[in-house]
Length: 599
Image 1 (cartoon, rainbow, N blue to C red):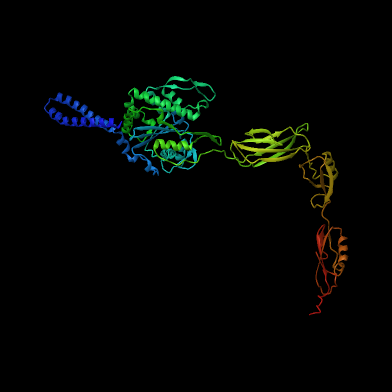
Image 2: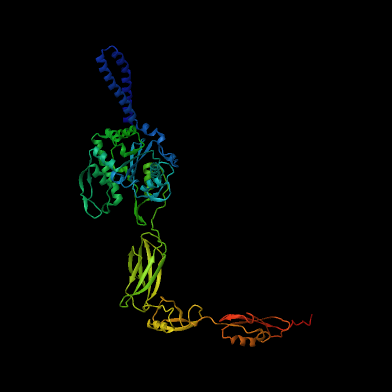
């Protein structure tokens, strides 16, 4: 290939020199002609000058290596640590196909690349490789560092990039992430196209004839395309390369179908001699294409592609396995194959990343798990279970009774078990499952007691009325009484338990009846208290019938009082005390403290 280009370049240089030498002679000759001949001569000169420009341009286009490799300003600006290992004269071009079209633009503002690939051209060996990275590949994203689908890298850059242009941030993040996945290769150029643009360009190229190797089906299992040879228009081409289903390998099957039909499209364009029209197509459909390649570079690539014969061994795809995490489907890369592919295609050696095995996130504990016993109108019992999840994630509840699965529930937070008997005990266990991950089990032990009875509200009734209502409810009446300054004597003050409490039939209900206002009396005069013995004073106080709490303090020697005589009382004689009050008696230890003979 290089020898062919070099020979062509030499011939074009000689042609350009020949034209230049004869231009001077032609200009001299034109000066001596009449006006009409001068005009004819000028037209010829323009045509000849155009030929010179075309020859020079073709010379530049033919020298593809110089056009592509001499423009350092198109590098991403990222310093890659593996640059020294790269062979010279290698150009990497990212190809991105976005899920944007006119219809989607009506309701969305952000679009993601569904198709990601890198074309690498080695000008030393004239080798071309096409490396496909599936859109759902689970990889580290360059801007945020989180692991996600590679086609979400545009979103991460758009939302979290540092530059003022969000779309440029999204594109940079996508290219940097793609570079990282492929071992840190420098991606000097990119070409992105949306769905409408791809359809228009395929139509402009006359469509493509392609042999479909297997039937294609929709999500309902209906066949939508029969295997065999078909001619695809632009719209049909887009639908075909975007289609995936379970019967044909999902994304993996789609990737290899894309390889096949792209190979047929390239060969069709090449064999029809339409490669020379690629720059024109590029100019016409520029609104649907985003690239940092110049028109001259596009033309150079088209010229170079004339001698490319696509074969299966130039197409590569990063292998992996289909795995899910929290219900989201991912393509987990085979790290051993990734390392081998990077070495084979790009000539560099990289360390394998840890091989991923995706797991689901366990759900948090329930906020509560409770029960109530219910009875229907016929008295048949049921157990009503209720709970609240720990977060808002989509989960499944596994409900067990006595170790056996009762039900798997989704989207509800309650369950009624009607298959229960009075007097029996049941052990319920609730396990929350978030896809494959399960949380800690939650348990309840439920005794199915007889129907509960509400304690009637008898406050304000007479004791006889209250007793009748309590006993009619099937409960045991227990009398109690206390003084009340607010509730008249003989009227119910309160019940224990309070009204409205559900209790088992036959349970005791204490009804507290008012004795009227709290009684109060005066403590007798001092001459009946002071100087008396403790026992005498106690009897005097008890005769008041106020259920007084009497306390005695004997800790002081008191002049004028013998041991055991009361010298003070609190409250003091003559003061009023109420029922249940506390009265403190102070008793003397004698007239004076004894003297220690040893002193």
